[in-house]
Every structure is written in structure tokens, then in C-alpha cells.
Length: 209
Image 1: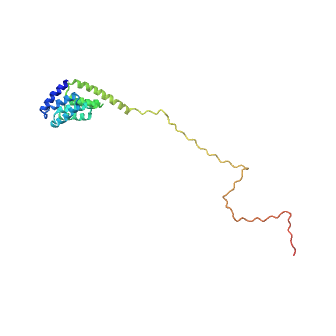
Image 2: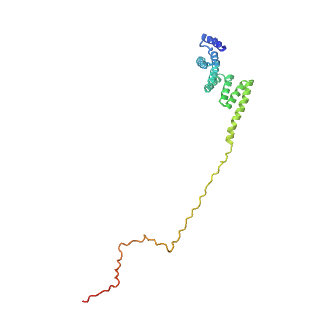
Image 3: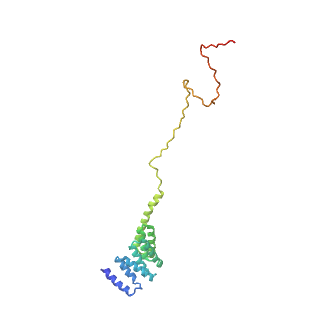
């Protein structure tokens, strides 16, 4: 109910001067009440009228963080730094985005810048110490994997040595082995006729003239 009454009051102020800067407090109240889309629309329209209004960009970036649109929120926070390079809220927001996405080295960079701008910020100092520990832990497995020696395989590859092939010596044919015809000698197609043999007991008779 407190948010409702606050929103009513801020809406009245905004209606009195819709082109002024009262849109930023109203958008922040919308964001806290869970009316994120209303807050985003109000910021976008108001920033067009007041492009150098740092507080409006911060409210807008926080709305995008609540919507889990980290890429867009990152861009808006950087716009804030373009207007105010040492803005504590923007630097803290960028560090939180880096942590949420596991980019611990970036988180260290943003927190270091924050402490340079606000050296007495104890919360930032504690966050920086935690970020450095996480960054160191995150880089150890990568370094270990890069320097780890290659392990030998558990199995051994056996190389088979081929056995020499011994050619059997041809055995000499035995005396009883049948002769093989030699077809290499030319075959004569005009053989010499063999004279006919005379039958046994046959005598030649000559006729006297």
C-alpha cells in the first residue's frame, strides 16, 4: 500500500509537468512495485527529452537488470559512465553484472575503478577481495589443463610380425611317375607312312612268264 500511495503522489507530479524530470522518480517507483514494463517505457520516453539525465539512465539500467536483460543493462550503465566516469552506482552495477555472468576478472576491474573513485567504500573493498579469490580459482583449472602432461593409454597396441613364407622345394618326380606329354614340340601333319606288315605264314608267289 505504501508503494501505491507513493506512486499516486509521483504520478500527480508527473501530470503537472510531463516534460520535466519527474519521470525518473516515478519510473523507479514503478520498478519497485513490480511494474517493470511501465518503468521501462517511462524511462525511454523521458530520456529522449533529457538525454543527459544521469539518474534516468540509472533507473533504466536497474529496470533492465530486473528483466534479466544483462546485455542491454550493460550498455546503459556504460552510457552513464560516458556522462559521469566515476559514477559509483554505475560501477557497482557493472561489477554485479560481471559477477552474475561469471566474468570475475571484469568484476575485479569494475570494483577497482569504484575504489579509486571512492577509497573509503568498505563494501566495495570486501567485494573486491572476494572477486579476486574467485578470479584466481577460475583460472587455476584452465592453467592445470594446459600444463598437464599427456597420459599414456591404458592399453598397448600390439604389432604383429608377419611370419616369413617358406616356399616348398619342388620334389623330383619318381621313376614310376607317368610321363607327361610335351606339347611344346611341333606337331607334324604329314607323317611318314609306315609300310604294312605281312601276315604270318604268307609267302610270296611269283608267276613265271
